[in-house]
Amino acid sequence: MDRHLLTPLLDLPETHQKILGDYDGAYSLGIGDDGAFVLDVEGHDLQRFPQSVTIGFETIPVVVRGGFIAPEARSV
Image 1: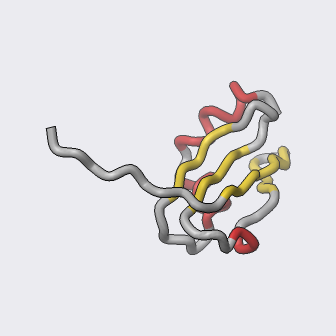
Image 2: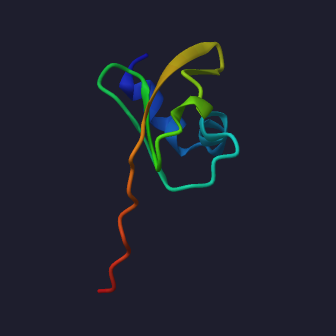
């Protein structure tokens, strides 16, 4: 799928819910150059996440990568 068509889907809570399910750790969700969602999560239990999600009539691949470390908030 075209990156430009996926971009608005990143803002929808439904997209995050479909991909994350009941996961409650830190994560980053973006779009890869190949038109797939790219999900970075803490830890290495990657089997719990889908390999693709269907939104509307489109099936979009999900690439999941482990070892994500959330950035720490810094005071200004």
